[in-house]
Image (cartoon, rainbow, N blue to C red; front, side, top):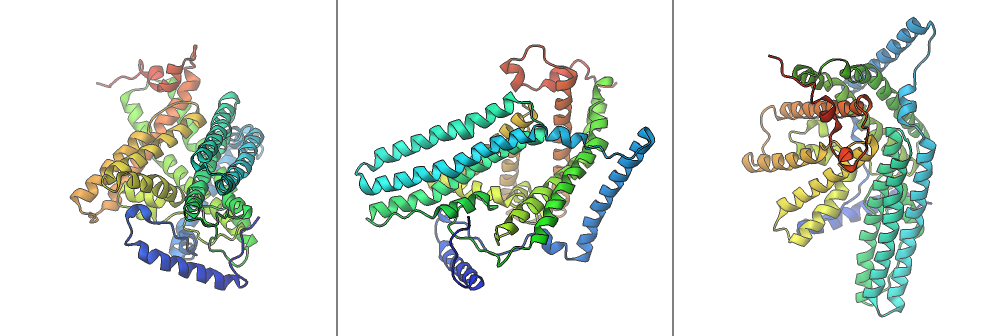
Length: 474
């Protein structure tokens, strides 16, 4: 299941690989923007380095202490109410409802991703060597993949999520894995097909990468395909266990946050008229839980989960994120918050659009990339939460406009206290999204729709439920 070794002496071969990557990277600086390529290097995750500093680790300890307070609160309340100590996992059980069926759906998508694209590419490459109809063969192979994608990675997961009563987290497992498999396949075909076509035009040998490298790519924490990656010399199993334990701890932490800070507020919003004052206060009251949940999601997935898999697979490039907390603008935040997805969007959407436009419309390429990202986010939120509440797409457009304004009028210079302004905007945006989506979630419960129509599914139910109750105080 591992790709081909890079040499007999692994550490020496890794240094050679990195040196070759750097040598290749230097002349590419003179190439057009759309011809740059991702270079993988051996590096640690930023938090692993920062947590070795005592002052930064104290901040981490504060978050752990807050978790202890929440656990103590739950234990004390349960003891007072029930005269026994019982930790409630009701939120987690609901969120991961029917997880076994979600894993079954994942298995179907994984087997398709593992077997079909590689086999189709193999047959296509062999046909190009023996047949003299490259266009027809290419069209047939593309049609087979499109039909398979539309069926197994398109219709099937959407139908599964809609037809069964999954919990929100189980829905995210299916939909996010659907998107991950699609991006993995695109990267694999995008990196392998052009060299095959160039080899055919030059009458060269059209060799396919070993199946083991493709299998390794499906599990390694990157969306950019390479036949070889920098590798660590051995697996630190203690590090793997610690990260998985932290991952589970973050899930429990998040469930306590929902139980203590979110559910008591938003589940009772229908008991009183929703005045403008109440609505505004709800947004500001959502700031703390929204911030905690976002930080937990970041640490849980981008650090613990990805580092655990990277360590098991000896994947040496741990740059899954950068110092996004030091960002001074939203474009910088999105470039550093999720480097894994950002790289895929940059190299396969933004660069390809630049190639189409010949770098004459960078603003159009940038805006198109953010719109595609926003649409995909809305797609995931709609299917997983069960309602359509457009927030990410308009926010993405605002981010692009803000970035253009920032680069045009400030010439890229950091403004005084710009990090404070960024965090203020970020907290307000997170609180607004968290509050409105929570209100929409409970409006589906408090004001169930008698007749379900397409229009009712794509319109915001919150406004129709509470519009008659919203009044402006005199």
